[in-house]
Image (cartoon, rainbow, N blue to C red):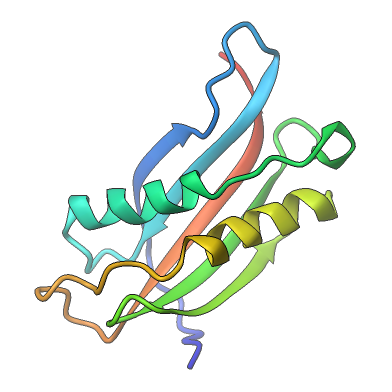
Length: 133
C-alpha cells in the first residue's frame, strides 16, 4: 500500500554516479530516506544498489543541465520494493525511465533494520544531470 503522507526526508548520500573528470556535465544520484531510519550502513547499501544499476541513456536521452528525475520508492520490512514511481520528471523520457529502472532493478533490498520503527521505508532517489564544479 502506498503511503501518501508527506514525510520530512533526511539528506544523507550524494555522490556522482559516474565521476567525469574534465567534463562539463555528468549524472548525480542523491538518496533521501525517512528520518526514522538511523542506520547509515543500511542507507549506504540501498544507495549503492541503486547506483550500481544505473545505465545512462545515450546523448539524445540526456536532460538539460540542472534538470532531475525524482523516483519515490516504498520498501517493505522484508526489503521488497512495494512501489516505485517517478514523482518529478526531468524533461527527458529516457532519463526518467533509466532512473525508475535503476530503482526497480536494484530490488530486493536487505530487510529493514530491526530498530527501524515503521513497517515501510520511504526513499527518494534524485538523478540529475549537473555541471561539474
